[in-house]
Length: 296
Image (tube, rainbow, N blue to C red; front, side, top):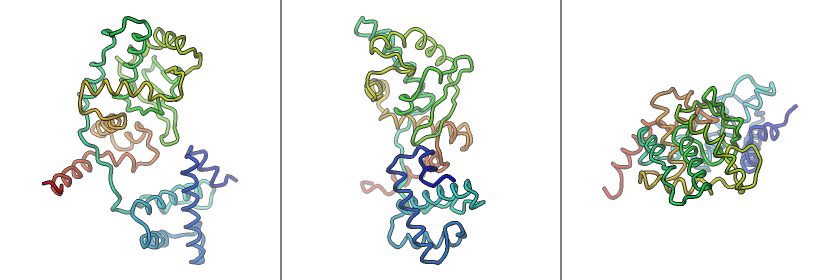
């Protein structure tokens, strides 16, 4: 029988996250022991009583981390046959600070970043600089159309690109689930040239023959990403960083797809992560900021 630690490991959580989760579940077990019951037999009302118990000494953000741990634990109990329901599903304590995204880029602005990125007018007449410029435009496409983050780029391999079907497979990471996303037709053209002509030049230059889609002689993809973002800011001053671009992409998706579809497209393991990007929530937060800002 799989123990809970192994279950969390298979979800690719970090050691720190696993330790926090186990600590929070140990707290639940201690409370259950004081109430002469077991976690496997808790009712919904008892879980609410436990949350009320946590409220006496914890902030909403901390309590929600406990609830997150309980949700995982009950999913594990269901998998092992101890429970048939997850009584913590849908529970969340209000009052936690929300993420507020400022000056998000529209779909047109995101697309302008791709088309504005120069690959022909390179200041150094050098084959390697021209090759990296074309590589960087491929990266920009994956930023503005698929909303990739730095750790996604590091895990990409050539086999993950299916030019015939026009899709790209994004492997799972510690924080995000895997997903398969469609490519724009113009991305397919750029990727075909990159894989067949440009990538071999870069491979030879950095002296590597692995299957990584973006060969590097360093484990840090930010050595590529930082100069790209710096250049994108010259095209549009609203650009802040990789996370800001991804937030803009996800908010754009929410205008065209239902939340479950966007959850899958973004690789969010939990629907709550996707809900935090809902535009109506963001707009209400912006209104609240405008209304109650101390300088108003």
